[in-house]
Amino acid sequence: MPASTLTSPPRGVDAQLDRLRDLFAGMGSALVCFSGGVDSAFVLAVAHEVLGSGAVGMTAVSPSLAPEERKLAVEVGRQIGARHELVESHEIDDESYLANNPDRCFHCKSELYRLGAAKQAEWSLACVVNGTNLDDLGDYRPGLAAAKEYGARSPLVEAGFHKDDIRRAASLLGLSVWDKPAAACLSSRIPYGTRVTRERLAQIAALEEELHAMGLRQLRVRWHALPGADGTVRDAAMARIEVAEVELARAFEQRDAIVSAGKRHGYAYVTLDLQGYRVGSHNEVLRGRSLRVV
Image (cartoon, rainbow, N blue to C red; front, side, top):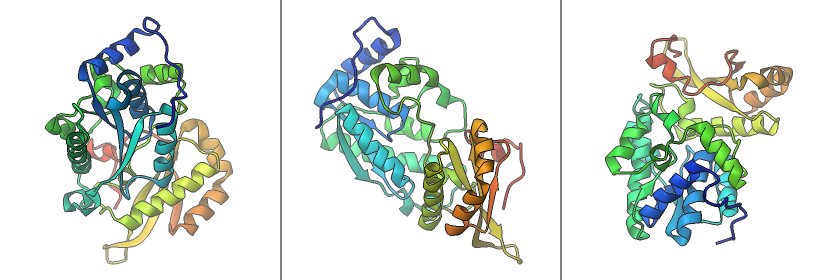
């Protein structure tokens, strides 16, 4: 394992950080479900600081993980200095997941925690932990039920961390992703009721990567199927692009390049959502606040 390049603030500097350290000390060892985002990166960093080789980061690799996110997870794992394992997951083979009903995340996370439990036993670790924080408990998140079912722990919740607390403490440690925008699996870009396929996930990932290369940081490419003349869903799709409100003007200035990129990646229409980026915008349909896009 490479040596950590992070700083280690002494005890007494941050009370929340000390609570988290104490939690890991009580665990003895842990498998950290590690995506490369700030939440799970912070968990792995503190676990590694306290437990050393007893902390192992596991990243589940599947078509729903964007290639650029996989690459980042490897880079962050090196910065932390922890043992980091890439493990293939198979939610894409689960019909309940592909159907993309509102409980899709439950089936995805069930596969993650099934893998975690198997690797925990294989690697002789005491428990499985995730990066869930207090702010995650409000939105519709069926994946939390999967964590409970498999007995995964949420040390950030136990230690009282909100998202802002995590970013502050991650910055204190020197984590490169302390200000990284929130990310989610690629399947979350597809509206409920529209089938998840490998091809659609790859199409989303390719356009998002190109938009990031244009300098846009926080964004989602929401994939919407276009119905044929007979009302049936066909392969043609519209990209509804959400960017952070502060980036809307920049995105509009680059609209020609964005449209060209969307066309190259097979979208019939490329649109910019004027509401901007927001967490769980597909969940708005579940709460009855918008019309279903078919």
